[in-house]
Image (cartoon, rainbow, N blue to C red; front, top):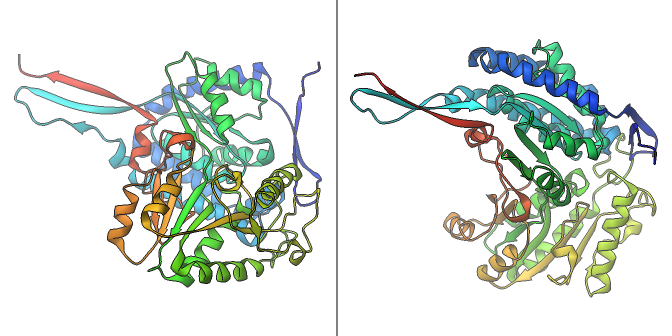
Length: 465
């Protein structure tokens, strides 16, 4: 069987080939990893202040091209042009935060004073970081690993999804323009087989993967037998709980956006909502009315706020999940005819709001990753907690209430990496980004994120003999 040597990005806008690139060979991987290993020796010994300055230039170079990057995003993943630039601004927010805390986060950690001794823990870089980024937020996902890894003294090899080939190239172009030394930041377009080879290669010291649970399992298997750190940010089935004491208009508006932004293709997007029965009918009515106001269509149209999903096969999978729920007794409250741009066999999919759902349905238990949400009524906090935890995922969860004490009490019982009150679908770079259960392991961002890109080395110096 002939091995595929070309990879393509098919635009969900019109099905055209937007980008076509040659796949890397084993020789290419060897060349890039050798270069990364060599560069890391010098880069790790470069003073932190100089690394900070270099990465600052990289961020400035990258964000200077915001209009071009946003237009390319629209073509590659179908995100509406009115929203695409927001990812570049998010990239900058995260990068600049990590730059601002690098010195404090990476400084030596002294032990308590002891006469005759100097004792401290120093954070050393791991070596070569292999970053694997998903297509749905290609720049935001990549920046979580790339910027702190470089600041910590690691070198980086970046591999983006076949859906976002240009994004990897834009990273390395910005690095070159900023004067990053050769070998410090590189990319490769790779087959799954070559990715596995890279994960197994002893020159790779850390793998940072964002993607599906299946992809994470494949990376984990490939790393078996190697004592390396593997960061996995995987799927989610993120819940929201709307209490009777919430600001209902705010909850409705925020949870519609949380479920349908980026056409529902967000790992921390809202996929299931539990509403206290006292406000259930009012919530559902307001929610459906707001969803009906969306405009599905060509993402290049500035009035479009709901673009296509990434591929026709993804639309078919989402539709199958909806149909199965309806066959099991759920009701869809959105007539697809209200969205004439939706067409079977294409990535253009009408949004859907489902009620009369339960946890026997995949729509409430398995990741959907599309413009659909299920809503259930609950009678108590305890019922909501049990349902929110009834999931193999645990990335984020949110509560909508005016009672902060209740939020904290409930938050302590929810199995999740991030718990929100009165907001959702947001990643704060000052906080640790982490999942539990099948949503992954490891951590990015915040000062804690630097811990996963370094190893502690203890210095125990006896100065009086």
